[in-house]
Length: 262
Image (cartoon, rainbow, N blue to C red):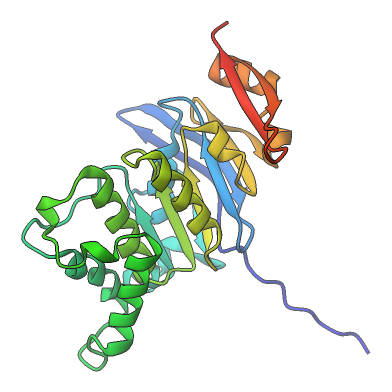
C-alpha cells in the first residue's frame, strides 16, 4: 500500500518577480520560497529593493512581472480580508491616527477577524494585551499615540501586527528607531514566535542571527542561504563594497562581523 504524504505549501513564495517604476527596473526576476517557521533576513545596500520587495509580497504594489503566492494560493486572487488574516506588514514609516490610545491602535490588528457576527471580545482583548506585553509596551496602554517617541511608536506598530495573529510577518527595518536593548529583545522575540518572518535589515550582525539570509544587489537576488554561507568576505566586498572579516566573541563563541572601507 502506498502512503500519500501531503506537502505543506510554502507560507510565502514568489517567482520571476519584477517591478518597474517610471521605466526603471527596481526588482528583476526574484524567485524565492520561504520555509515554514523560519526568520529570513533580507539585506542589501541602500536602493537594492528591500522595501519594494516586501511591498510586493504584501500585495501593496502590483508586480510588473512574475507572481506571489501566500499559503500556496496566488496572492492576487485572494480576498483582502483573507490576506490580512494571514499576513501582517510593518513598514519603516508606518503611521496611526493621532487621537487614539495605544490600546486602540494595537486593537486595530484584530480588525480582519471581526464582523457584525463576531464583535471585539474578551479573547480579542487578551490577544491585544499579550501583543503589548511581548513588545515591552504594556505600560503604554493608556498613552495617546501622538505622545509616543519614535521607538515607542515602532514597538506599538509591531504589537499591532502581532495582534493580527498572522502566519507570515513582514518587517521593514524594524529596529531603525529602537535603542540597543529593544533592538536585541525585538529580534529575539520575533524569532521565538510561531510565525514565518521576512525582515529587511541594515545591520548584518543582526542578520547573522536569522535562519537564512537573502542578499539583494541592484534589484536582483544574488545570494540565498545560511548566514555564514552567504555573508562571506567576498560577497560583502562585491555587494556592499566593504572589506569584512569575522571575529569570535569570547563570551559565547558567536561569530561577529567587523568592517573597514577598502
